[in-house]
Image (cartoon, rainbow, N blue to C red; front, top):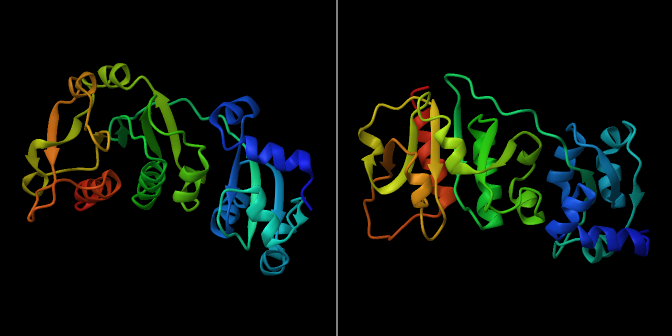
Length: 248
């Protein structure tokens, strides 16, 4: 059973200010919680339903302390409209220093505000084997519950760095090709691409900011064959990365 103090703590972690203050975040649902339990994140609190306990007794037996609660209690404490599995509170982890090697391939996100888009992009990065995602300081918070949920567990494998993006890119213009997604760019399908360098994707509505675009040395675009005005940024990310990875 949840105590009032724990419910209050969990609710507070829906707000970035309190996540930063406590250096903690919430994970909900069977898939994401299982990924968490298999990761190197420290678990502070773990609440599971009886069915989840029965199904995943082996992993729970590996030293995790947990409480068995009802589905209604999970819903009342968390953000999901339904949750018949589990909810956990985990400590944020300290990231290793970011040092790009000569043939690294990373994506950089400029002002991606939608948590669902950011979470899906992190999941896409994980699918294609990327390890690091660079975010401008105005991107959605990595530990936002909607971001964590949208990653479907990939949050445990991707390092997400928040940096002054124009300054960071400026430090790498001599060593790396920096690609920027733009309607004015070169057709991806007509380029010989290798999974190396930095790919910058911009805000859902406004694209890449001018101060970031100034650091880009190659503009690229996904060719359109129909009449849609634009693509969702997460969808565009998947298509672009696939083109880079296709001949890897």
